Length: 310
Image (tube, rainbow, N blue to C red):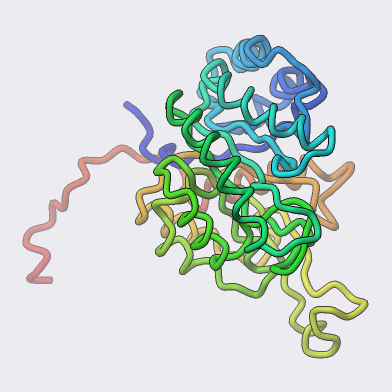
């Protein structure tokens, strides 16, 4: 019997720029992860992605683990050498996603450096209209992570897809059905935005989810504000932050989301370095509990009489 709980899988991200993705999958595949997101930072370093996909799938073997999404993070809208590598990386990931069994490629939109979000929209439309068509021709969806990368509305280096106002503008510029979001609550909490209503509004545009949380330090905000010398928020591994992931997964299910929540580690101020995988495995088990725990087969029907009489 298939496990309907796994319509939302819990996994983690795997660095792939250095060619180590398959080795890392082999190292941690038996810890209970149900999916992996191999991701590249700015460049694929000229790797043969078809061969890398084969090695990743060989590392998984007969385990019930998916590779539904590839990550390609950089700035494909600008023209420095690494920016050009990022743009080519997006094309290569789109063209080779099927070798991983992936149907989605995710990352940053890019932006014109030092310019506002509206100033970046013409270049965004130019690049992403073509990439959206390329992806659609191959049955691939594109998902933008909602990470500001220290940018804001007026200026930044990497990404414009970090606020709902920007999403409205982006989806107007590229109304393609295969362009959506790689959503996570953390980046909205950093902006002091309530993430839950976003799922209800944007659920049909959420193609992939990152498992990352945040702890808002309200005492710091009350005393120092959000631009003082003390950080007003910490990014956290799920289970250690403020988010109610039971509510998040409930809203994702109600919105019809089926896919993966892949943990984005390496940000927690406590569960890092030697404690990184301790934190990630705790997050894995926590998210599985928030998903409903172990699947228990049943008839799916009420058998106690007429419920209206209770």
